[in-house]
Figure (cartoon, rainbow, N blue to C red):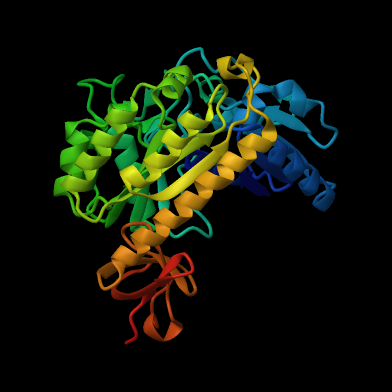
Length: 425
């Protein structure tokens, strides 16, 4: 059996939940492709992956699930390589895997009721087994939230994930303890819109309150990170946690998408350019040395040159160290797909310019780390990441005895080739 998860960290987490389901049901002849739908390129990659896996495993049962399967089940069911299509809710139901084969396509209405969580704290025939680990990965992911109630005009994901629902903290802590027993020391809280965490739970706990409580409940967590944060939803609880808690890493990733107010309104984002700048300034003040990352979309419909330049300028103004650039990709069924589109050549050129500016921003940030003492997680032989998520080259002579997942301190001696280098012993 094999599970190939494409796209986000939440998919990676759920992929391991699926792997546990396959093992529990003794499904050794099944290959699962857990798809992403964030861009048209992501769907294209999913189809290419399906065809490649079918060529490599002609006798296996091939199951397609994930966001792309949820929003376009017929498209994947029409592929000759595919045996079964499961929706995002169905992929986490034990009964679906126990009865695999009863229906070729099983994709329900994701908007009806609460989405199924990958792990609800109960190892039972209904919820399935917990996630026991992440093969090949040095850090563990923890699902804390599912779905999204916002409707950004470019985004199809709410229709693939359903409404926002929060996982009770007790279940999150139980999963964290299990993974800590497997040796994981760095954890990433993940979901679709994690800054909306808690609105549907008793007492309406915030993300910051939940993270603080999680660290108290699971002392084996040495390093905690967050997946993408909506700058409009970062509240005082989260800011104070970042300031006060050394186990929260000085690295945040913001869902910015653009740096021009008119484009942000047409995207239906809930922050302005000025609000993004003020939030970044506050974060830097609260946690000196903080590394900020962000998502930016290049070539959103109606984006003129002046609007693009305002987005590009945001990279330096905020001091972004990490940049995820998405060339705009119209998603069928979203309002942005019906807006006046830019030429593909122009979109590609703007994406390339944003990536160039992002690379320069990373170089500046890495240079600022030289001479500092870094806390480094070993990711693989010769490579690790420090607390700011900077890649660190690890000379073998200096890390003897440190296995993947180990954490140690070292002084940074140089910055080059997109990474940090330890000072010679």
